[in-house]
Image (cartoon, rainbow, N blue to C red; front, side, top):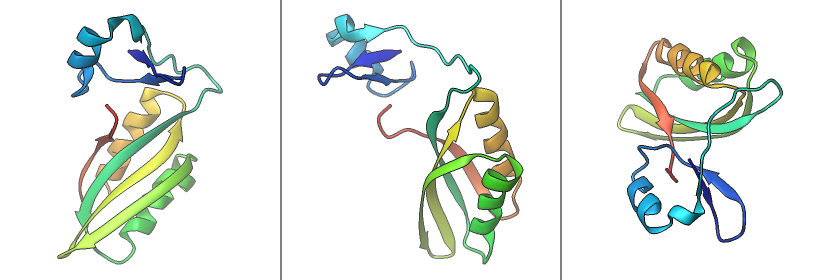
Length: 123
């Protein structure tokens, strides 16, 4: 669903967002219906959380899948490493949910990657 912000913009939230129930009950007048159309030419900025073994080249392998194999445009990569593991958030532009699911699947297949999930700090 879409939520009209105070500044007038619309932020899109998933129905299972931790803030959804509160937003829907307290501010129902600011909620609009939204759905991912996947129309050609539309780009959506999404973030994924990746956890894996901190090996030489693993970030390069992830980057290769994103840019070379799937030809997606990256907005940002933030990686932290600790005790042999890395945790990172990668923001990329996709034009439909199928591409997002393919991206997650392909990154999960990289040797040393332990988990990949959609990351959404706002809901």
